[in-house]
Length: 166
Image (cartoon, rainbow, N blue to C red; front, side):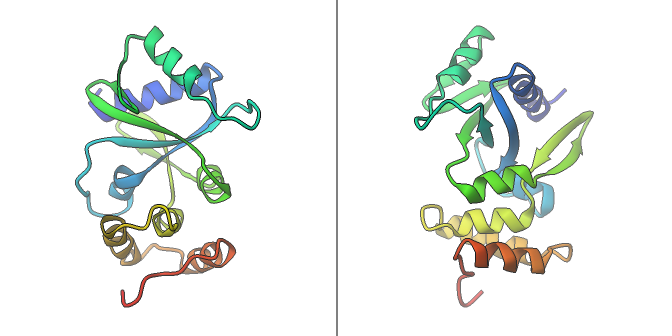
């Protein structure tokens, strides 16, 4: 089992232990499932937390990690040598992206990965819109399998736009 698979197994344990409801891989590692790999040093995992009221606390996740002797570095939990950033879904778009994630196979593991249409939208949110992410948007827009109708629908519903020129 490689480093990525170990991390996915741990995230699956988080779900089975009832700490999170759902998850999906996002960021550069998600892009690698759909397009060419891009440089990254961590694994971004968007999670739906068990409802706990208006304030979000990651303490149950960090407590779970400490019980399993995973090292905690800043906002990352190091699983099998891979820094994993657990990101509670910050808005409706991210919640929808997790709910609509694709279930894919990696090695011997099932993994939930944010679909490219949602990755594009997440990268275009004002708080996430960086040059690096716009490069990823351009890569994803080249996919033949991209559902352009779905992308247009998502962008319209969340008041997002593609950069020009692209």
